[in-house]
Length: 312
Image (tube, rainbow, N blue to C red; front, side, top):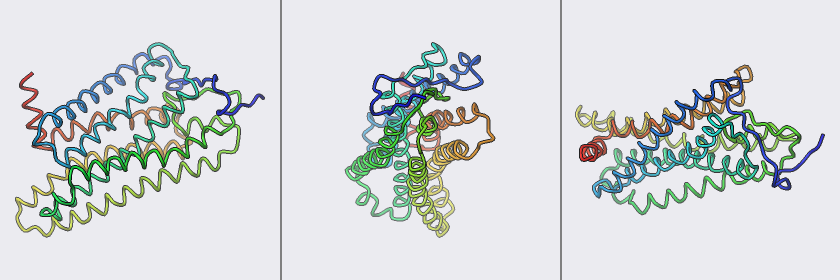
């Protein structure tokens, strides 16, 4: 059996099969894929446009929302166009470099996305628990630095995984039963020892997401304690309303990614096409739902979006 290494086989390609077992329905499956993708692009670009145009929205909370929108544009864009090419045109080949780049961009953006959600929770904690110091603690410049730190963290965390992946030996089977180059799916093709790779990838999931989720839970624990101490029912409801949008976004984002990762790693009894559909849902659904949630739940943003919609 011939063996090659990713680092030396520059002209080799992988084959993405799409959704195994549902090949006959690919053309029809592409329709909801494309619909959700276009909807997410329109929603997130609308959020970016409105916040950029409105000086009154140039605040830390809305700058974080812009960062969230950018990751929500980048994540599906890194995978959906290729998936549509597979579904509609049967263009299943992808170069090794392209496959690694797709895996890198998707997972770095996912780590940045998690970091933005964590920072948004801290933002809500400061706004509710230390409102008088909010403008001095969370300035626009500080939010920009946190965004840069999130980008740096995403690259530094996933880069070793990419290097480990690029050094794995691969045998004759270059077929990836997936719509995109998910790093676990690539590693499963290796005919070498992937123990170290699997351990590091599992550590990333639990350490990075565990750290972010711990800070989020801690922030909301302190927020709930502060809200329970508020005697005024009106102030009580106002404080809760400022957090509901972020809480819904966290549920859709973390819920989908955790469920997808855990079923992919430990759900051996689940059909392959179910794994692939779940993996695509976590890339597609949160980016579509997030601008809708914030557009509905955040009054200031909702009013501004309504004004621009009426002008069109």
